[in-house]
Length: 232
Image (cartoon, rainbow, N blue to C red; front, top):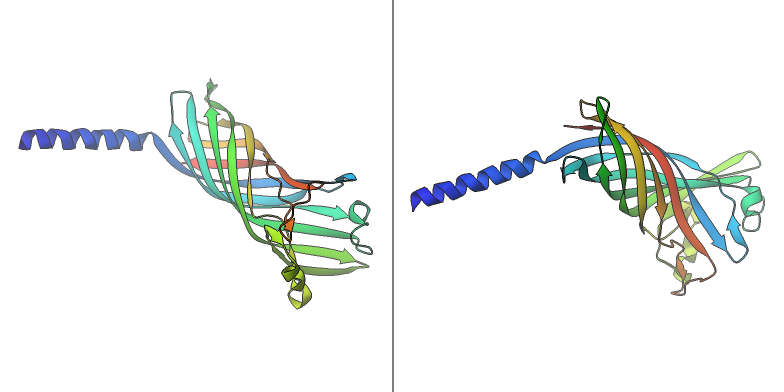
């Protein structure tokens, strides 16, 4: 009986070791340019891209010789800029306003990585989940800059009319977002890699007003960037 127990324990240990060997942990970071697709009954509102950054931990789960599943947990900044000609119907007298929001993001990409030269080509796609938890805005008017904070809201109600004031906190978008990623890059022999990525949000982030959604307006995120990573 003891012999069978020892054999089973050895088998379990071998399976665990083999499974662990199929997962490589790592880190990555980089820069991104983001914007939003703002739409109302008049069409799309003109916005400009806003620079940001991202960093966090990654995992590479081997599926086969040429395929792996790569989830990551990242802190990332997003946002957009609007000039007066893009939103003069909303805020008269303001030259421009810049929004920078903070997100925790979970992309999960399936990566095809065939051998190419001394390394591997990276071609990937997959979904992402993101949660916004704060941010800042900065507006310029007549040479004077004013800054404040952003508050993510699912529903903008009359009770939120107190936002602003001395705290300069203004309502922003819905906090939870999801969408799709694509990427292309290259992995070097020493587990160093880089990739260019694109991202499109699929959820309408326009908050409801007093529980009622505006069917004529929508807000969706869009982003592109470059990442450099290392797997241990």
